[in-house]
Image 1 (cartoon, rainbow, N blue to C red):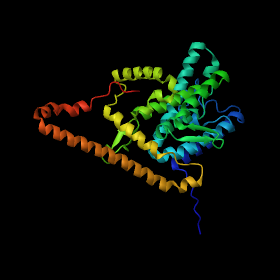
Image 2: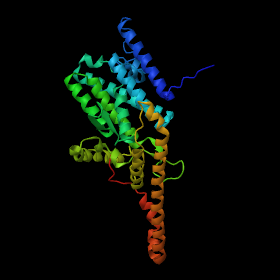
Image 3: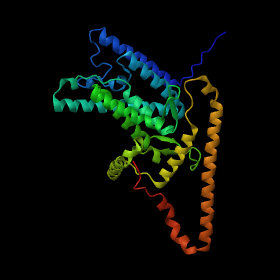
Image 4: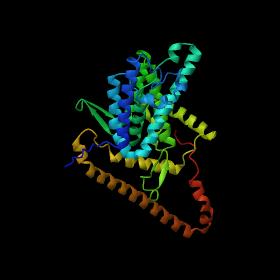
Length: 352
């Protein structure tokens, strides 16, 4: 009689955990026990990285010590379990590939320019490695999906909402970079943050949960107001940050790097953000959370159906009122023929 062992970890998350263990152990063996054979073979060393292009992927999984290995493992296990189930393995794989490779490339270029300016060989020979960029990227994703969920630490003594974690993470790595000298972690943290936010904000396609689209409809990016760049920071500094971010956004729209959000995009994303937020964050740490998963999904589905019915009801009422007014005023009907085109106009003052 065969006994099957069911491990509740999605397939791609398992692969990432295996890569983390294999690459980290191999990296340490080659670096410390084989006479420095590694020399940038698995981690990024700016001076040699062009000769080993695969390091832009493997460096994320090459941890330096057991503590950072445990942190990386926990990040991939718990973050991957939720995100892969929320997005599907394919979409999660695209996200992981982007937030590992692009931050590593950007950090390498920064260190190359740093060496060119200062001629400090420590910059050219620095080891760029670890999952810091991936950690920052995951926190941005959770900020998008469940911003209002509260995480309790020390049995409820400390309570922090998920939406505050990216700012705390960046602040900690920035202070550490200047005080302790962990400058590679500082650069990777910010690179991972910007890569993740840019992709999720402007490019990632996702299912329309707002109820305003037809079956199988997808939307590009997340134009919701709560996912704007300024909303990652404390309220007191949001106005100046919003002004700068909106200026950069409008400049990129002007040169056709970004496509502007329409008013409908913003409205749909706001409704979708509400639908996601009410779904909550399922427990990933205990079996009780898994046992309650079925009822939680049913409740989430009911909430989404209620939102969809409400949006449909509002549209039907608006359409009925519009037909009634047009029937009593034929001239108005002629002047309103261009209304659909106007409604699709880009929102020039949309937030970045």
